[in-house]
Length: 211
Ligand code: ADP
Ligand code: 5GP
Image (cartoon, helix red, strand yellow):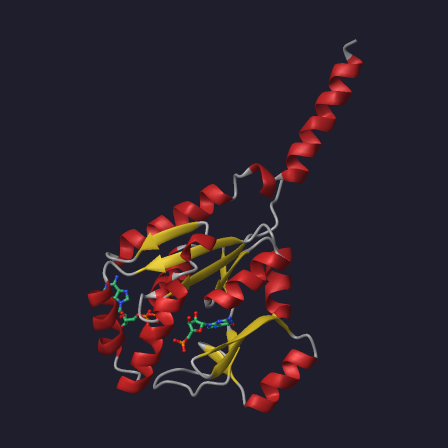
């Protein structure tokens, strides 16, 4: 029996490696659909509209909110970020696992709307390594990096809300662990209620027939 896809939420401090991990995960395994968010932040060098993000003006973003076009949205370090509704709903219906790489406020909103969503938090091996990665990426000013580190300390308070943490030390190992957690999540009883019910009904019919 075909499962509906799982909605997978991936969060983690800026620089922990979420983007890098998600890119590899969708390259290596077939069943994942990576949602592209909308944002009002400026594109980084090399980012393309519609690929990393839909880059919107503040006015266009606020229009999307009004039209109920976003599953969730949040403000992060002075910019809006949000998940477009259409893509997520279509991919889940088609049986694909949809990945949202979003920050913690959005993650908690998704959990409320989709109680069977799977919440994963990517940890760096150490804070020193986090700072090194964030600085090494070379895409933010020192001021923005400081803001993001402050935000990391705030986000750290919410980690227990997640179902699993994964440590992104060796990239390949972490990608494999993410995939294994998702595979296991598919087999939880509460994500298989229809199938369990069907078997129960068949058992009922069979046991009546045998009386
Ligand atoms: P995030 O999306 O969480 O902000 P990125 O994916 O942009 O983080 O990664 C931040 C930086 O760390 C990038 O320069 C990336 O190449 C590097 N990086 C990611 N994962 C690893 C890893 N496992 N080991 C070493 N460097 C990594
Ligand atoms: P960045 O500017 O580094 O691409 O992203 C900043 C933060 O915004 C990251 O924590 C990222 O996960 C988060 N983010 C990206 N897209 C969304 C979204 O659609 N909704 C929410 N709530 N957060 C998002």
